[in-house]
Length: 443
Image (cartoon, rainbow, N blue to C red):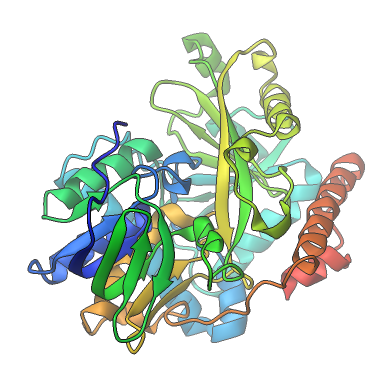
């Protein structure tokens, strides 16, 4: 974790990339695959993987920020199918890079389980499976009854699960830092501890930093949630905090009772989101939302921990796995992810301005960033590619509302979804889908 050298003077390169997270690193990697002669610099305010790339819940999933049925409604069935296939291919592509270059990141492709915990969640997985079948995308997917689901993982109140095969569990910090070293081996230079203060496009694209200027033929913005802190992009993406807790390593007896032998990634159907993974050293990672949105999209290290949310996550571990009522928790952390206004990522290149960018993964970025990197490399090098026909390429979503309307709207939605989840859990009845919050999400 020792930082790499900072920028020491103004420089000029072919491509300047803001951000040494997954998006920036994959973009640099694929640009070098397309054109090894390119002179590329990556500018990072902290260290490689400091943001969501190094702090996430370990899911390398083919799930896209918008579901296939939503894409089909907006862009047509063919676009939805091509997007899903591109995401599935992306998980395989990442796995191939990991294997070919021996990136030690605890990679294990065991799939994911979207569980129905309680009868109120069962209609959701039934509906999701039916939608996959309707779009002819159910290959490899399996709808499990309660017994089959419990045979995979012993969770209380389990009513069934949807098994999706194209997901791997990783150690995110190991993957992002291994990728950084791999990118450096191609000649890319990563400058850390160097803050970008302003972005300029036009005739002379440039990143202005606190340590000098970086001029380039093309500037690539890969800041995700942190892009909201830069003038000109403050309403393009909204930072939303996701928090995580981690148990101590469990005993063999604990695991014999719990199962979870294939390390599937696990999530329930709650609106307020939860996600679990089993680490290579036998711990349970349990993450979720709950930390409140901050006025004016504030990002602050103090917000990485929210006692109420972390306590809720730890209580969930004990409730889902009663055997672990006395388990100890060794780590808690969190950080912001980037939400787009319409839940669709933007992967774009304005050739006239010399500015490319990718952002808005809405919590599904580990694999989507690799797809973004390949797409940006194709856009920048003018390489014909089927990836450039996907809905997110050169997509221009609405900007987020100005404050205080953004704050009031997001806080309302956060509280509304908590109320909906609590009511469903208390009554055993699924959400009606008719509440204002649900109707706003649907649109």
